[in-house]
Length: 76
Ligand SMILES: [Zn+2]
Image (cartoon, rainbow, N blue to C red; front, side, top):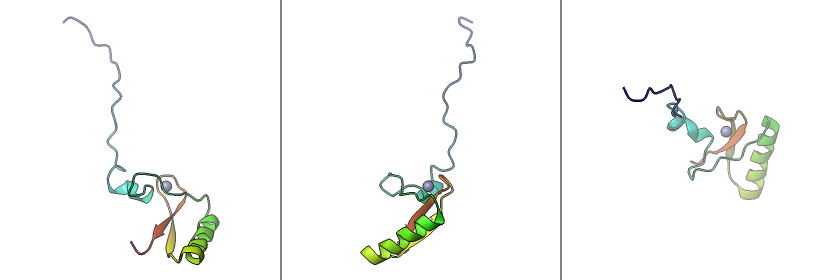
């Protein structure tokens, strides 16, 4: 054997369960992260504001990835 390979750790990507469907709660379809709200209060306020200002019906939910709140478009 020429060179002993000393256990150099390769930066292996762990198989990412969020790469598929699971990440959608945090990422928009265009690949940018969704707006996050730190509390249910903030998220609810944003929901009301969106309804008043834009007439859109949004639904707050907690994100399993960043553990903050995002708004989902209910018409989707
Ligand atoms: Zn998130």
